Length: 587
Image 1 (tube, helix red, strand yellow):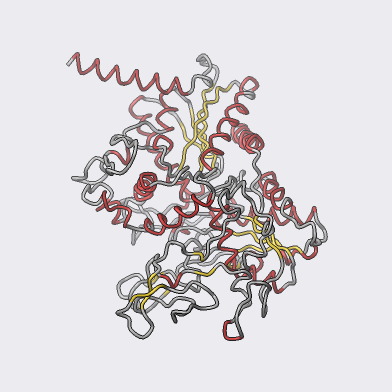
Image 2 (tube, one colour):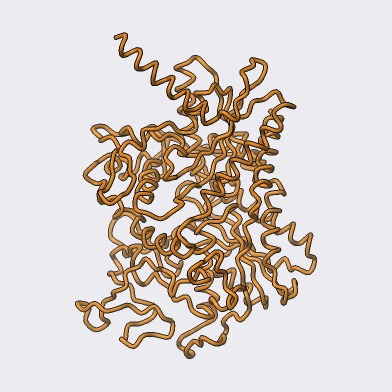
């Protein structure tokens, strides 16, 4: 027994030493009159380099957040499924998509490094302010998904099975280099902060540029559970606060159910309704956040096109279907969009209000012919996308009018307004990643063409070292490339991904490869688009062929550019530090 107690004590001391070592530059000598405040800088996360191990690790993390889903209940801790896990969900699409995107930018996503830099600057910014507040700040970072396992809220929540008779999550494929079986058996940021005796923990969130979102709420709920268990074990009263949601709107509006409701649940006891206007988000509403984006938009104004002929399209993702019961992400995003618009109009009187639009990505569509309970699937009409479910909190609809377009509708409206230059911004992003560097440019180019890209001809080999640009031959690089012969479906032949058509007789766009009563999958060729010189908008193949040298019919013949993500980590950290101080002083 003495030996066991000694081992437990030794393990505890080792963990404490590790946490103290990580925070050694931040820890001040303990003074009972000084409050020790843990700060968690929360972001979305993602892979820095592309490899199957990283995709596997973040896939199981995604599966872990919905405790009522079949993936959680039957697959996550079932070792028979682990070797073939990348065949489920969106994994096959993601493997093809990210393989292209990472290769296009030289193999390394800049987002994780930027997150580390912001965290480092946030530590400095808060440490400079400690003396005036009688506070000892200890800063760490937390992500929704990450191949750096110790960044997610509670790694052992995955390591230890969450279902009866489940297996401990220990898996390495034979082809994975430097893979540790026990990589999920580590402390996360919440446990590290608790181990150094914080009095409270404050989360501040830029997962989607400060908008409250179910992904951050996932991390928040896990952190809260860990803290409650810690308090009960140690007779302490550590509290968790969220600077983006100081009045706990998401707690107040979360559906009541037993067991806990998730979006895979079919029923709940009640759905509390709140007035979201009474639950402000001090981070998203701060004009300084909008200023970051305005600065990035300004950098991509054309020197040749006057402001009055310039358009701005603010593109954004939606929420998970069903999460409108508690998720105010769309409400918050609209606040940021309007702040950006107001600032632009104030700075540039010649800029037309009618030329600053909001554009959302595509959503699943209803197909009543589908067999089974779900009638939703991807469609060409919605550009093969599924990230555009836009609903306000507790409402059946989302933004309308100038902020309610789909992005291709917004581009069409700007084209019809006569603009000659379009700047496209993604306000839910505050750091560069493959999303805004590769994915979104291709989504835009398939609509209005790659030749209108402002850098076309000069190219950008700093960001795209091999070819100087982000564009694929067709967007949907992950889809299957063989299609059924039009006259004999038993024969497979190369699909056609060219707007002008192909010599083998395959039609463009490619035909749906499954019957209308069978759900189309992510890899169906009909969901791919040619990235052509002047795009699909304003073009009808029945009226004549496209031309690689000039716009025809009603195609857009102006220029366009992606806004610049402001790469000032010190300024972002200073903004975050200000919001944390304001949060503390408001209590």
